[in-house]
Length: 374
Image (tube, rainbow, N blue to C red):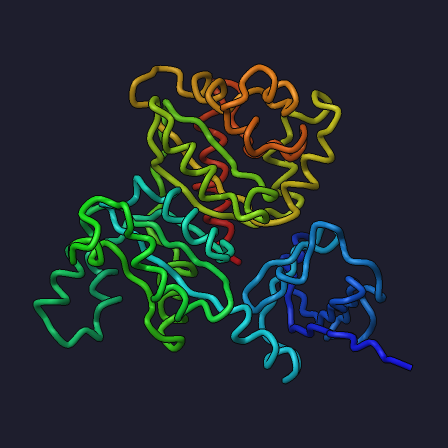
């Protein structure tokens, strides 16, 4: 009689308890073939969640060190492997790396990210930031060539940069090999000036240094803008590796510029706060909250450049929120091309002009500072 081998992924994890304002620690066991999960409270050594079917929105690819996994409304951060077997299976298979894109190529972030996603890389984190000279000096403090260090520091403080963290099998080596592909078709392709517009770790040992500096460290806050709108690329887009295509379409908007961008894992309280104005207005409000907390989303601030009402103009640009209507009336819009239904309709965008600044402030001031405290 043939026996079936059951694969288990085991992790140390933590969850932030909003009421108690502290982190609680757990051991999580994910049964791959059964798509079931079990959670044990490490403090009491008691079962927190008995072995049960995992939410449909969660998949095996979501489990890796550093990931945030939403289980029945709670967002667990996977801190480390719990056993040698999981470490052996996933260390190389779910490896992380980072690509730092400097000012000259920020206008092509969507295209660059799409190139990575089409090669099997999953987006793990994304952040637009401004690096100051002292921070740049800190990052390049190990550079022995002073002239080269000065050049690299100058390229960092020349304007905003974008940090893209990705996950893939053998990701560090894969990114090194992919860089020529990323540069194909770009301005001055093949020129050494192209390579100087990017930074990325060349070895596994370098990844943590990059991550600590660009992802974990809070850099300058984004100033509040007036003529702006907030766009949120929804979790189903990130999950399907379509984030690059959607951001590329957003960047193609002739009436606006991207001036802030960051990925977030929203907890339920934050999602409810953000969507509060729709409670009692839209029949699918609770479903929208559930979807927003189901995985990684990307918030973007767009500022109007050829318009005095960027909120209304961009709302028309993305198409009707009802995807079926968008497909019939505006088939070339973002929601028509990438939306699935009224819940998974590719992007959220600000509805009312007076809400643009407050929605952007919610992500790029309130949530960013909350995450710093965590």
